[in-house]
Image 1 (cartoon, rainbow, N blue to C red):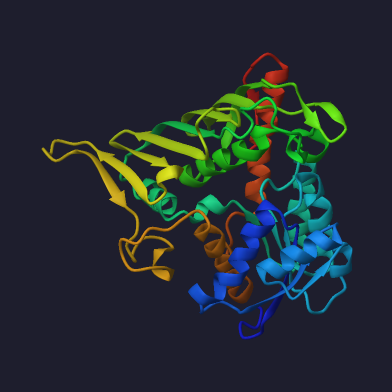
Image 2: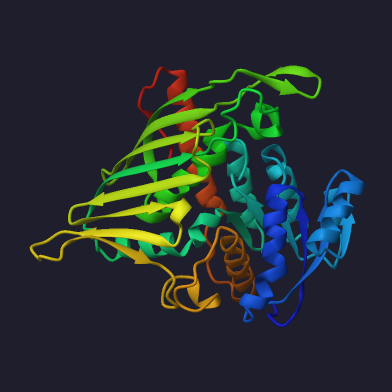
Amino acid sequence: MTDSTRTLGVAVVGYSFMGRAHSNAWRNVGAFYPGVPQVRMQTLVGRDETKVGQAAAELGWAGTATDWRSLLDRDDIDIIDVCTPGHLHAEVALAALKAGKHVLVEKPLANSVAECEELVAAAAASSSRSLLGFNYRRVPALALARELVRDGRIGTVQEARISYLQDWLSDPQAPMTWRLRKETAGSGVLGDLGSHAVDQLHYLLGEHVTQASGTLRTFVPQRPGPDGTEAVTVDDAAWATLHTASGVVASLEVSRVATGRKNALAIELYGTTGSLRFDLERLNELVLTEVGGARTAGASTILVTEPEHPYVEAWWPAGHVLGWDHTFTSQAADFLRAIATDDPVHATFEDGLAAQRVLAAIEASHARGGTLTDTGN
């Protein structure tokens, strides 16, 4: 158990999109979760000294570094938060665990099943705590949905539909980024958005996908790069049918070329006595349908902003909505609480491995013409 009165030094590796989101969380966690260990925003890491210095000044970091390896032997760093492109996740996290640091890794855990397995083994062998950043587990409506499923409010779940659609690549002239190169991203939309969707299915159902069949598609095979036209080596969209051991069948669709959809994670669970529906673009709402004989049976929209709802008590008065960024602050609080108490964490590296196995099975199925493929879960 860690001394909960000691201030913990934090370093974030990466200062772009996810680095900024995680920085915002570390800056605010103590204000909204005063019961967790206090943190000191010690070091922000990035390869470009000028840019990382500017980001550190904007985000509230005490110092910067241009090489994450310099963090490993520092006594003033207790937590290393990995927000790099996917191909660096395993290397940084493995070294940090070996150095005795607590480790938070932004999803996906790594770019391959083999790397995920190595990380799971390293986390199990370490006395430090580790957490995988599936932040949507901290959306109050989704945490409530998990409770309702567990409590049998919709009966036995038989079917599920999950889609995660964005449009930031719908323009063929959108430029190349690391997310469009297999060597850095591992996969395209499948790893980027599909990992969230698969983890939510696992999280909500309380079981893993055991079989998958799928299809991948790259609609824009070339994009403008820094040195001219460059080949896109990952998928733009993916479709899959997923099966669990208990017999749940789920359809999955993910895309980054879905024109007009900005950040649309939609989840539908259909049980024997009811259903649940969620839309990330209305993230404070959960639609519950219960059937029976009552005249009032039917769909009801729950505004998930009451203090008795998961995670809401830390924030604003009842009825005052939360946003996407709040999930990262709640995630940081959960991690700090686990470090101080040895309580279980979620999502674990094992959860990341389970999700990666499903993504790998979808890729393998596509390569075999869409055949049903075991995930290994």
